[in-house]
Length: 494
Ligand SMILES: Nc1ncnc2c1ncn2[C@@H]1O[C@H](COP(=O)(O)OP(=O)(O)OP(=O)(O)O)[C@@H](O)[C@H]1O
Image (cartoon, rainbow, N blue to C red; front, side, top):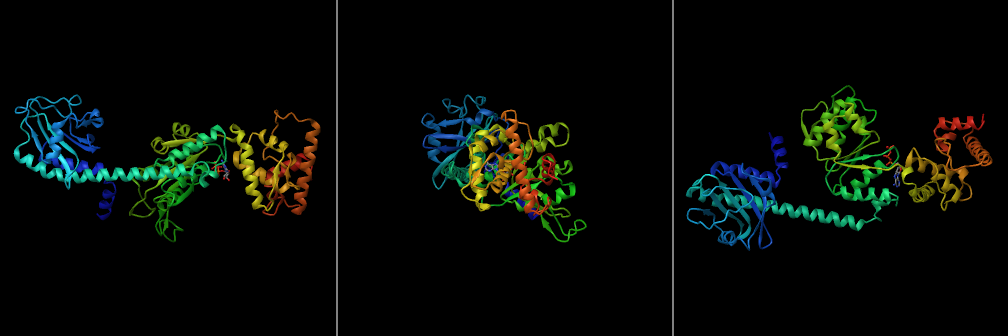
């Protein structure tokens, strides 16, 4: 019972409050159109809410110019409800003339909305039938309009708070500009990357869910963290869940948690990521891999903000913003029936598609310097520079592993270079490829192979011939052991 009350209260926005009040008024003073307008400046009333079967779309854009409608201004100043009797006042103009067509002689009431003598707005009640508003109903409206004034005041305050919040966020974000510590981690100046930064700045302060698309290593998680850090949820948790390799049960327990004894091995109660992210952001990585059967539960949790722990009865509430990421074609998965369409549309509110590194090669120089500085500190090799030839080698590669691969390649190069300059021979790619752009002569290739051979032999000496493991040559060279083995085979290293 208590649970139910709390849920209802949390959804009580000003619009819902107004709707409940207008519904109640309907029972005492039957109307076909109720309109609440708020005062905008000295001379204008602007429609905020409307209820009843006579509503038209145009009503929501309707404004009353009080300089022209002195009759309405007089009613507002008087502070009392006015019953308009067209038979006695043939010069009366309908309030919503041109927007709603009401028959001559219809019933109409104007009720000023005031608190402590301050005019907040106006309520009008209309009915097509004449003489609907008896003196008793007019009196009741006088009293009821005081309740409506309170609801209108709540709505105006809410708007101004929201406005203030948005302004603060906007100001904070513009102060952050391009040099902000948050955006500093998103290196790049190419046109494509600047467009991504603009999108991040735009969506971060909103509450919209975001879907980040892009190949592996393009920076999806980094972008998700930046959106969270720039949002007004930044002081609340950023929680991550990688959806790949989860079966239904694991996905349910990871997302929503479990009660003690919910399954064999559930020795204690555990909160799920949805609960941990309350007030903050939940980053769902590899969302395309989320088991199909758990998707309705996730949809409900996103839509209603409620869920139950596995093996639990209690409904838990959590206010979470979802950022998800995938490198799969999710729409294709929807078409194949492997991903729920309703969940897809719920998540895909604001898509951001990250470009692969090969489409923003102008950024390779900046990114390389960023990583060289960062990794130089980590590896205790400061002041390393990149030679022109090495840079051109980096630019000519196709980077299937994108920024992550660039970072790993440079880390390897820093370990390998001896005299503070990264040369082409220090750059060993993860994937061999024949590059037609760099028409290298056979001699250059042979010299390069010789250099790589020396580097591998040096690493093997250091690791005492061990390839696998944390102290193996593969780890030293930041290569997969299988990649190292195939390079050794190609270069004839036994
Ligand atoms: N623009 C960038 N500036 C600086 N570093 C970046 C940038 N983009 C990515 N990185 C770095 O590259 C690495 C890979 O990025 P990230 O993990 O965000 O990629 P991803 O797209 O989520 O990868 P995956 O799909 O494999 O999970 C991280 O170390 C990240 O810090």
